[in-house]
Image (cartoon, rainbow, N blue to C red; front, side):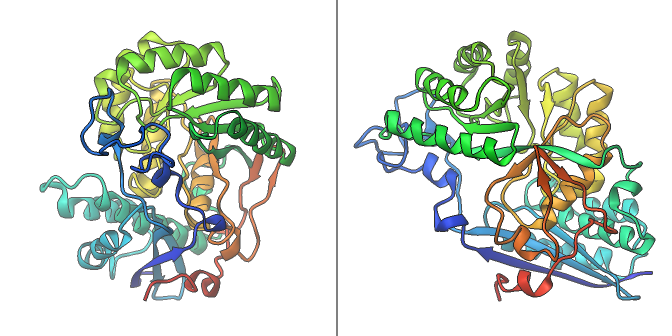
Length: 410
């Protein structure tokens, strides 16, 4: 059984409710949108510290990703996804120009040799993360999907065995309350949180990082709305320096926060190690880290208490399973990072979560109807804080190709 067709195509769908991406608002220059910049701020030169403008990333006005479709000579189709927050065309070019010649004609079940060959194409040139790893992720996931379908079992059975039949998930993510919204914004956020708890979520994540006292008020409003039994996690997307992260972390300890996610920029491994050593709160991160070697450096330094690799960014199912197993040797749990994307991405995350002994929880995006359940023959089953692991062969889900391709960019 050999790979006889390799296809990569971009899908682009409107965001849920046609609202802008959360990141586009957080790092925008408009003071009415950006909660951290005063009116008249130049946006690219600042005397404030830490300067938020240095963290500004590019975000598209739509839900963009790269879908990989592999087909074998006996007609089995495997689906994969490269999570590309922007410019998925870059990963598409990598699949077509670098990875397709490596994968085409290979024995489909030789997944590890294929991964090593794909990674080797640009390894000596320093391309060990970013678009390169995202492209490899899409192909690797599709290979695992084929393997499971060929053998008639879910992927988790092939990744060492199925540890659990349902995955604990947390609602991701409650948006930041803009400074101009004040108390009215916090009330609206609290109502949203209470609604998620009514749906069955037992853990919620909220975006903060605007100011310690403002964030404290937001956390207190949320706690009042959801009660003492619901977990609240915080993500600040690298908004702090080390000193501010310590102050914020101590405040969050007082407010009973489960974990503080991405308190610093991902390059600052030494800062993460110092922060984790100085706080009792769980310091989490990893969505911006790629490959097992980088994770090993962070783990050996004691820099993370909870790792959050991303299956569609860090090298696919092959690499994230190695990463989570590696973390287990340090007694560190993992929680798959799952951003907005397609159901392929979410299904791969669930299969990995089902196979990992040291799973804590799994991110579950709230914006998923169009490219999530909307492209599946049968939707994901969520109940009482858990999502059932799909039981079909491969990734466990049946992709409605026609529904998916309506968003294809041609």
